[in-house]
Length: 188
Image 1 (tube, helix red, strand yellow):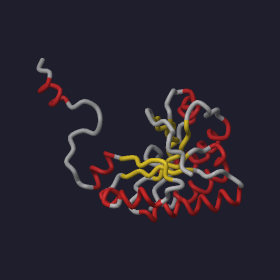
Image 2 (tube, one colour; image 1 turned 90 degrees about the vertical axis):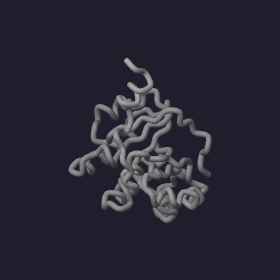
Image 3 (cartoon, one colour; image 1 turned 180 degrees about the vertical axis):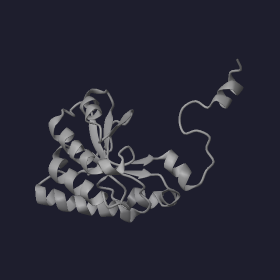
Image 4 (cartoon, one colour; image 1 turned 45 degrees about the vertical axis):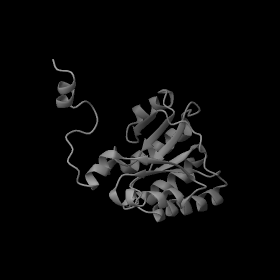
């Protein structure tokens, strides 16, 4: 059964390609740390990042936070190895997998089925899922996605930047202060 009461007041994203950042992450004070294999990792570094993440899960003390791994998108050839290698080699250390660009219930069901097979083969407790909604199709299907895997789905996460791109929204800046708005509210 998905753990519904895990604290998510603060999340720290850590690129799997940076051992230095992986080493510091367990004691950073975040409620949840997600080790990233997706956006923060360049394509030539993907395989090494996966190895780094597995090493970090197995050798660092994550007892002060929840731990998640953001896998690569289901539309990439990196995804299946992310799921299999991470779950088989370090699944006993993992709280959740963060699944990017979830567009339909079948995306989560695919990951859940693969995890179920690995957990059965390795004798692991269930690894929960966080669904990252960051496309227009994901938003259109959000209610069905929320019901897709009730025993595993722990959270829906909204990815505003990729969502804006998928809807071709005109944006000035993603995150941070926007000087025009600040000057209008607080004239010099």
